[in-house]
Image (cartoon, rainbow, N blue to C red):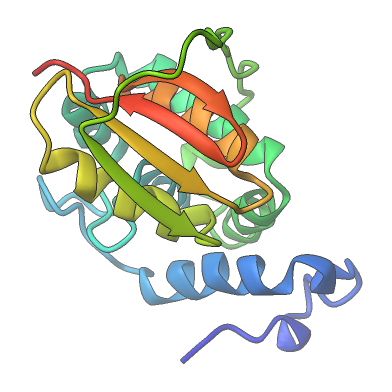
Length: 200
């Protein structure tokens, strides 16, 4: 069952139809995940942690922030602030974040202030040699990073994947996702991205 934006009284006056497909994906995932438990530690998940899991590629097996930070090898609070800032910078995810905030007032993320996303420059050198190539087509938002995470897991540390991602959000999504997960974005020239799998 997909989420129908036009039936949501909170979003009815916000004209979200320009992003309807992506917003419906985010809200449908949140709706299905209500009452879900962390895939690793079985702690109860709030909707904000579900969105954070989507961003990092764990849409189908969401994790709490503590387990996400352990999985990607990042400090919990810093990762949480970076994820929240990134989510609030993407309209489709920000709508899901606010939708959750209005329904889960007890959640600590509902009143948190977040730091700006830190992004590093990506070197534009000679095209690297890729070990694997993947054409992601028009995949965007959660589906792109989920599939990317799974494909990188199959590679050896240090190997490079050449990704062709035509989604208009990829120029922002790919550097931010790599920064959050520890994989190196070696080169980015939309729609082609070279990602080096992080060392274990």
